[in-house]
Image (cartoon, rainbow, N blue to C red):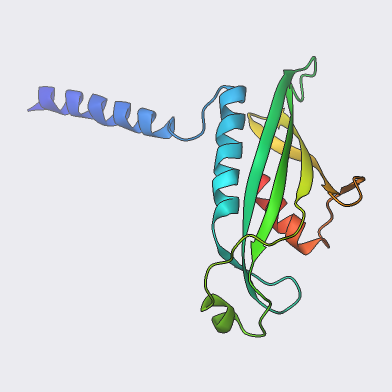
Length: 161
């Protein structure tokens, strides 16, 4: 009976080690690609959003996504990455109550010009950290930092942190 116990413990410990290694890849480039694919998928999901106390359904359409991952000489941040994309918001009209907004049909793409986004990341402590986020309105073309007060843009950026 004792001899059967050791192989079972070996199998169990091997399984637990393999399970602990699952998830985001360890390679920084693959980890970044994994991160942005998940962020893009989450941004496309329909969710309830309350920018000013009223409610609406919201999702984002992400296009023209480009990124570059660069090795650095820094020990603290051995890699940096730049991500750019275009995003259009898809949203319903604002309603006073959450249940009413939840009952509306899913949002369609609005007929407004999309915004351009530039995000910067640093690879620190084995994970990618968002270091800056900027957006440019198609009408103006000038870049500005995305602030927490920018309700809809910061709702989008939250997926990419």
